[in-house]
Length: 336
Ligand SMILES: [Zn+2]
Image (cartoon, rainbow, N blue to C red; front, side, top):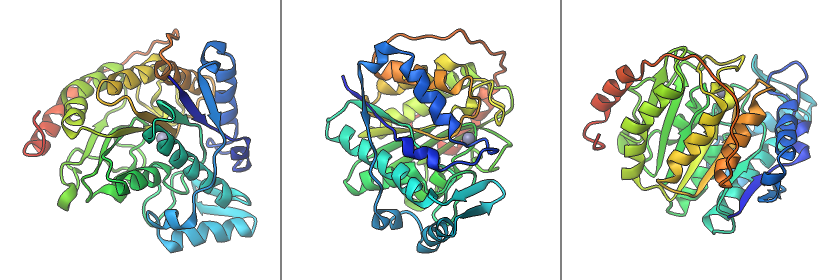
């Protein structure tokens, strides 16, 4: 078994000291990996290469790309009140997208079995035409787009506490990329209702589970069992990409769901039964005390190691209401 981790010190060049999405996030995660010699033996670190502008253009508009480039070249600025650009952000955002793309190619060609892209800035809020929500380019959409050009069926499972509106937007009318998301609702960016199921050829290929405040492991397990895994099984993906946001952990300051650290690894376990070629890419996660542990939980499952954390969260479970709605919306597309 080989697990690749894409990482570069260069990601810390995209940084704003007072912003929750700052360089410290990756530092604590790398330090957490270093504390686990057992894992270190089985991990191969890979230095990312930037994505080409041509590949960016297959997902994003020229205006959007030029805007980031232009703000970077004049030393930085803000795209909206949430989303900063620094002097090096254009290059670093290309490096992030390129890193995930590289990883997806090496998993597809069996060079490695699975992997984690420890990249920043995150991507899942970036739509075709707009950077937003701390995200510049949509890393996961760029990788999924390239994989689907090769005729591969891609399943994206997004467990960030925020809905991946950008990823949904980019693949809304496509059926070779299946988008599945659990998220807190109502919450930023206020999309991701059960009735958003795709359009045209992509109808039935977007699946949203908007959970209310306080839902945790049990609610998500039930959704996996009744909705996400049966659909994944019928879809038969060639590769699975996780939008790995750890802000759905119960301690997160920007969150409101109640997942525990071990549960992030459990998610890997469950999807491995469908398709072992799994790649995680970092999205959100802002509690510096816990994000490293959530990461270790996923990497330990990827490398077949048993590492558990003492972590408990009180939770509620209102999944049944969502499951009933989704069954209604999706009948005719999937056997549920
Ligand atoms: Zn998030």
